[in-house]
Length: 377
Image (cartoon, rainbow, N blue to C red; front, top):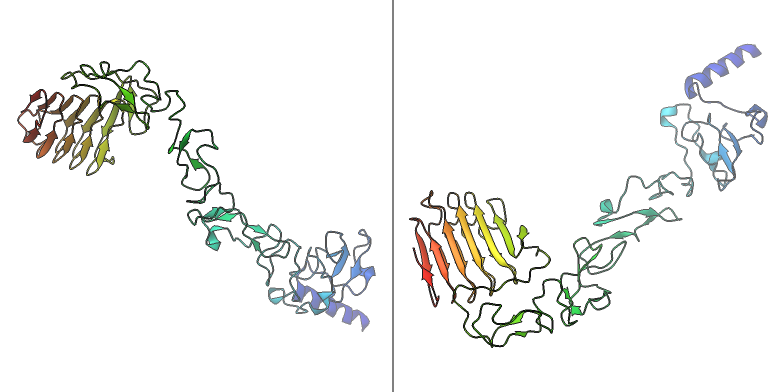
């Protein structure tokens, strides 16, 4: 009879707990090769483990949901589920913070963030961490643009700690770059340090420049507070004669720079159509409007003092475009003769210097104004 009961008990355990489940009744039933084994009240073996608050961890053959987890410090195993159905086994009891598993009642546990991120919490960027009390630590998360320096941000909108001067410049306005991870120093300058650098034309001193080298007949050249040439005391410029640019670092507005000339290439896919294209100061400028609608309905602004040339090629490439020549720089607009409508409705506004338009039969309006030498279509 005893043997029959034992067989029935073994079958019951096998059917209800699965082949990996082992039920103990005393410490002697636990793995003898691992010292310190104890049989918990739920029938699962546990073994010493200093990493657990209770100093004990369930064995690998404990009931479903408890295998290899820490035994609760308050011996919560007594309230563990006793169901023989492994699919409905619920370890129950309070969540154990510090066991590395985000359990019900915990936002996270150590490196287990339950798949949460700074972004899922409504932040723009950053690294989400878990606090020692198993709640989210968002100190390293950030929202760029809220004017608060947080997380890994260096600055945020108007929240700027440094200044242009503290970063080694003479003056200017320091800004925060997109993403809040760096400063934008484009508004800083070294004008006033008596060294001509960056895009400066002069700096206290004029270098080798004079009214004569800038294309004027005579006069006195000066350097203004923005380190640009002040030609107010120069006489009327020599018609069609432009100064030699000092050149330097190629400005961002240029597609490329060829010696002393800034090359700007406009296509249908660029920002040119319908926009304002401004040549940088201190450079000769050549704007290429290549392809259909490349500069259609756009406004082209030429640089002061220096030469400015625009070429149009393509169907409606310069349709209803307006080209504004500077007062003191030579200016020219060329329309590809092979396309009659390439410059249809375009306007060339001349300055005081030489100005010419090669229309080639297109409908182009040229306003000579006070140009010293104007070549209309």
